[in-house]
Length: 324
Ligand code: NAD
Ligand code: AKB
Image (cartoon, rainbow, N blue to C red; front, side, top):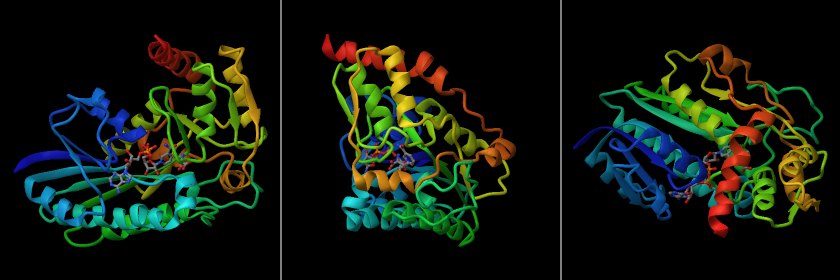
């Protein structure tokens, strides 16, 4: 039995890869449906290629490892979820239920922390009728299978935390769109933000699938990882789920930031009605004052600093290496 282990599901995803790089190696068990990027060798104790829907696999892991913390990241993101709601329900809801059962069994005799990345998709607005920041308890009327699943899983997690020994410590973060310089997401609806930048750095034209005036909250990946770690180390938490955010540009403002660094970037706007409807139902801004007050959250990167000090240097290096 290996003791004091952190389990990361969805470890090969965008957040998983970034988290693996900061957590270090010796106590991390990584799990993903797909093989792990070879560049992550050395950042984990063991990698399991497997499915969170495979309960026998989870039971076997429970016999081999004493898990103290679970970052449950495996999921189907919003655009893909809406195109295959059956798969989304299985992975996002039934898969999370499997992990919560696993966490409950692991927490029979010791505290087990369960970190769950939720989303701004839990909110449901009528064509962004609210422009001001939306707080955690407002507008919880998700319009998508993805958002409804996230909200339900937050509630399931809070319910499971009261079961059994009471030692399952469930904590959820509601992330906005995330922008990483190192990886590109696939299947999300906030993807136009990172894609605009990556395509520009790679010298490829980009057709943005939302209108120029579309405004959504964003966070860069280093801040998202910091938020997860800070939430994990917080001592007492009055809430089960917290908003975290930094900047809320319109798609046109994002294009302007991209053009500042890549003046020859070609970005056109060709809104996709289904994806536009989804982002129109999500808030333009979210209120993260509870996270600031309760566990000292604050992002390090605003829009200007994100582009100047993180995104542009790292993304330029990435495409320079790929072309060289
Ligand atoms: P991602 O799509 O990059 O990664 C998800 C990973 O889960 C993938 O590597 C995939 O192979 C794996 N996976 C999918 N189905 C699986 C299964 N059945 N069993 C095992 N692994 C499986 O997503 P991400 O951006 O890293 O997001 C991680 C979490 O954060 C998700 O829950 C997502 O909903 C949430 N989130 C992400 C964002 C964002 O902008 N990236 C914003 C809000 C919330
Ligand atoms: C998505 O677009 O699906 C994610 C999210 C906001 O949850 N980025």
